[in-house]
Structures are given as C-alpha cells and as structure tokens.
Length: 77
Image 1 (cartoon, one colour):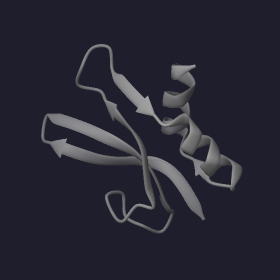
Image 2 (cartoon, rainbow, N blue to C red):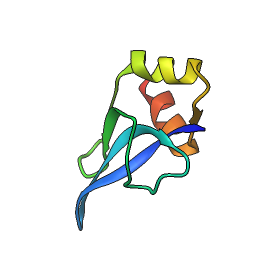
Image 3 (tube, rainbow, N blue to C red):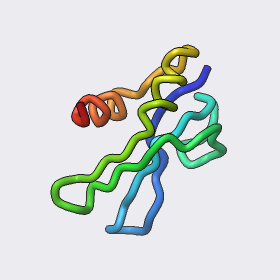
Image 4 (cartoon, helix red, strand yellow):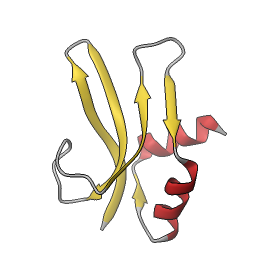
C-alpha cells in the first residue's frame, strides 16, 4: 500500500522534511516513489510546500495519508 508521509532531511538542529509517496514497508528515509513537497519547521512561521495536483492524484489512486501530513495540507487551505 502507498502512504504519503514525511521523510527527514537536513542536519541536527536544522531539520527539514520532504512530503513523499512511498510503499508503507519502506524505512522512514528509504526509497520513495515521488517527492510531493517539503516542510521546514525551522523558520517562523513554518513553511510548507505541496504539489496539490500530485497529492490529489495519489489520494485518488488509494494512497493513505499520515495524520501529520494531513494536518499540514489542511493548514494550507
């Protein structure tokens, strides 16, 4: 099953995240199918970018969204 979730990037104390579509069996920072956007909590206010077209596509084909990503995307609306 495909999940839309966060993958961690950056360094210690400079964390950034990618919003990715990946197989649920992959590790957190493992292989991804597609990068859908990014989330940067280090700036004030936190910055979130998401490709809404690709996000909608993955939802339409049955991808499950993690609660954190769901909250971040809803904040953009």
